[in-house]
Image 1 (tube, rainbow, N blue to C red):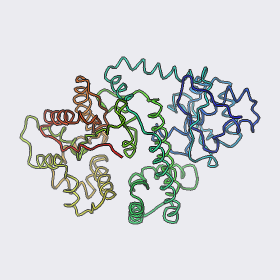
Image 2 (cartoon, rainbow, N blue to C red):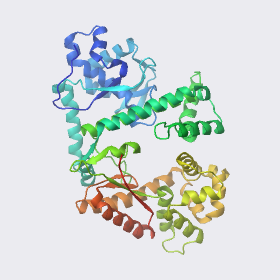
Image 3 (cartoon, one colour):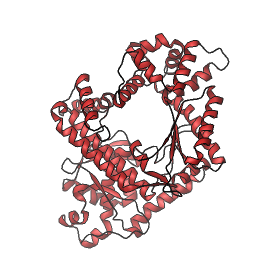
Image 4 (cartoon, rainbow, N blue to C red):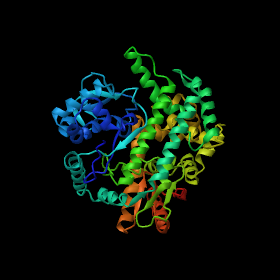
Length: 495
């Protein structure tokens, strides 16, 4: 008999490995009594959930990695007796492994002494969400913690309003879940079919480009592989760690499979939270920064399934800035030349980015093919990695940096100056200026007019009747702050 608690307080599912979907059966096989299962199976699921969902909230982790978990936090949540009991059970039965590497620092959900835990290879796979709380105890405890978070949020009127508007979003869950399943299954099938190409520690740029082309041609919508730059960003640190610990080097095949599972899990968690309205309060890490919500963390392919609670049949609209990242640099150019004559190259740069044709212009001038979405995505990633988001010495030495300096010398100098002390300073400054326009100007004006809206960093989602007003506010805000209006895409979020 499976014990599934009737909902009282907490509809948030806890994620466990698919092989443990029958958690009571697993516990029974390991000697737990029926009362123990009834009262404490949620504690087992909670620890597994902490490990499985860590990659959703922390980019340091991927499925199968050791996740640093604060022991003090687990004791606070579960009690010392059951923390020890559950960890011992999961380790002894081969569900989780421990690295036994003590360290003091920030782990999942808290600071203090941490050990690393991972789901073993036997149990790594699609997770399932289970609702097995002892609702009057642990379920209520987690619910009360969320209630306290929302109570604290009321001290910030702006974030509280964003949270209220987010709660007006609804999700057509079944087709969204089915799409997530299809993306994972199709991607994994493609990776396995091309194992001979990627089951190695290195792959040439040409070979990986051919793999991406094959994926694009086979199923553009459902096979989702990382760019070579993103692949290297994950692969190289892992291989360095392998060498330090005298382990076999991680293969590209292993990374691609892990990333596919990460994406599946992250999407599943996000979709479940939207379905159950178990939305974490929005966060703004520092004053003037971007705001992070359930919507900003949702993969773009799932936005089509969103609708407003008051109008299920109405198609929401997304107002998006064309060439948004290069366009945001115009805000910094406007600051620099506010009381000076704008150099010709800077004016040309601003006009190109405002036209929405900047990428096409640069790719054509550099004779780089951009014939389809895949090549466009690759070019954009390469362009920003080579110019905006790297150290100055890499920009100076690279093909992109040399070309950009020749054609936009004053813009190039601003980029170099902004990255002089710390290369991340440029991205931080651009994001803050973006937030000053989209959040602190446009969104606050919409709030003042009692208009529902939700932002995805540099774009605004609204109801169709409000699209004209949102567009007008975005254009006016950039006109005032940069002296130039961006090109805007006004597109329905339809299936």
